[in-house]
Length: 386
Image (cartoon, rainbow, N blue to C red; front, side):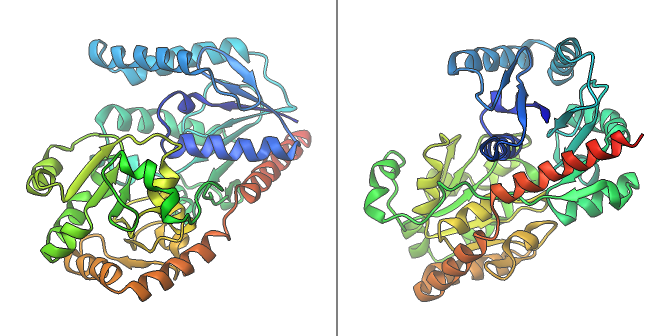
């Protein structure tokens, strides 16, 4: 079976969709059932080898220039990608599945499988840049209508998809994500070189991971953290790893004093090879997000044996289950007290970390790949009957 994948998210620093593409198709390639061809915007390659670092940097630089000098750069980039994809795969094939992992499908005459990670541009458009919302609300309905099958990454997203688009549940499959095998508990002495570059020590900080944007709800976490005893804040700085996103002005102002005192440390983008070490060294992990399609960072923390505190919204209860602490995302006092409990009660934190570690093993990329391939087979069988 031939599978074409839109892999353009791999050209940028990896966020959730990029990680999904990378791990899912690496696992599927290992299983050897599919001939996978990845589309990189201006070229495609067999297997999951992305363009070299030089080409990726050139493409990123070009996109940065577009953002600075061209109005609506996201729309322009889509036009270029659409034209190239249409040229390369214009004939289509009943025996070739096109998998679009990034919401809006490119032109293709054959079978289409679409992944919808979340419906935040519909549920909470105020938390996204206007251009992104406009693109999703304009183009996504047509992609959903023409998809042979839709993959979602949580039951919460399945419910939202049925609410907004009235999709027949028979056209939807849920495939849970997983933490990569690199996320695992590690002895403190093995973490020192990596953590030293950030001025951190193992078991000496609280970690939060994610792009700085409104729905990650960092302002509430900062308020909860600021209410901890001064001694705890000195002992456990709050470390945030993630790129600056959008609408961060108020967030930065709310945390100005904590940032200036180094009690809150914004690391920005952290290289992919360092992230497992940064997770493994944390004394606690906090993820107060208001809305998630899945919520991979809490699972990655759990896989490292780190106790997790997260919100009780959307997909996060599906991921964390009873192996982590959950609070309402607006409950500053509850968030502060749960965080304090994890930092002050070492035995409790260790037991919680062990529960999380065991739960994380229920999620595997091999299972995700098998379930995704089963969707491809189903789609081809349905097409053959037409």
